[in-house]
Length: 152
Image 1 (tube, rainbow, N blue to C red):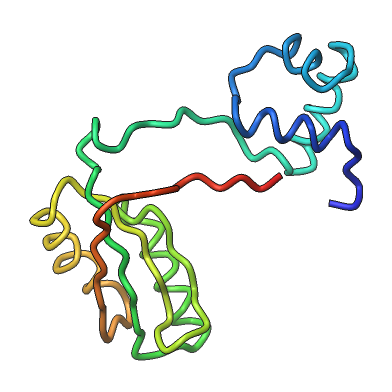
Image 2 (image 1 turned 30 degrees about the vertical axis):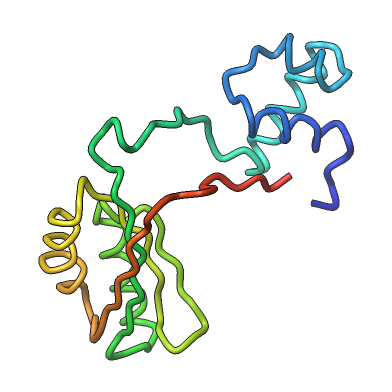
């Protein structure tokens, strides 16, 4: 982040909270005029600081309110096996997050489904069938407390 100045950081902070803000309002909040603000936004997008703009959906309204965290231990952790697992994880829509972990297990997955029965089906038919899965352990979320990161 060395190439970001205070205006860039302010722009990112505001956009992180409200991606639909108008450029005029954004410029006002960060203390710039509209054109320089637009140019900075475009530069931040081109340099990959801003990856995109999305709608934040309430998971419970779209039958995805059940959260489970799954520890996955692989039978083989050579590069080719890890790549195969990573590809498979990207192809399972119920896996919201997949992280390679330095621990006694290899991956931690965040899985969203409608309910525990749906989760059990995803675990049995999709996750357990992923390449090189040797063992899984599930932790069911009772209540999400904070889900969105603030990075700036």
